Length: 235
Image (tube, rainbow, N blue to C red; front, side, top):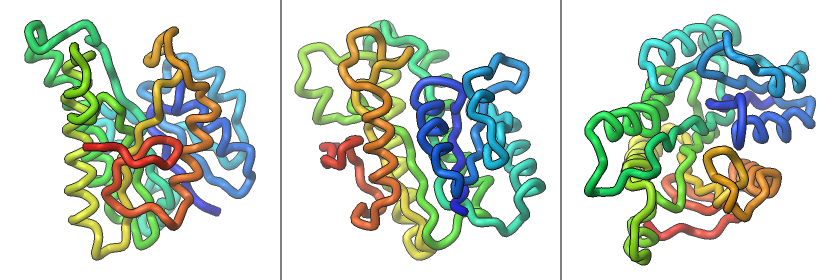
């Protein structure tokens, strides 16, 4: 039974990951939420014996450490995580440009979008073993080539954080190569979610189905930056 961890699983793409994975009873799913005290009725409606809802605020080092301890206690200290999906992320100041971006916004985005995924890997190291796959949820806005092609760069702070996440993925891939753990940066596309907004073109069902296919594929290489449909993204 493969074990999947999905951060930010209470809504949007994270919830859709859980929805699609829960249709296969062989999957053990660990869905993390920022706070267990919030309303997670949509996630709980998928509740099966193989679905575990745990608290993990990926913007808090303490919360991530606590989650790792809970996971090890629940599943065993040597249990392998087959798939770690670092899905949680923020785009809280999309209106900020290079001329208006603030230190607080940049610090917050780096903490959640970069240090969050980095710390998840660090604290779960004993569980990441040969054959494990780690996905860092990137974005087309993390591509320098894409942003350079546009007259006006959108969501400057978010874009910077996703470009940094891409670099993190490259470093992780190199440093974990000998241990046989694969790292992928994946752009989900412009998806119809709260973060994607009303102008988005892609349905979440198609995006997640494509990403799951990539994650299970033996043809992807560690350190790649891919679109949800398997196309390679330019850095």
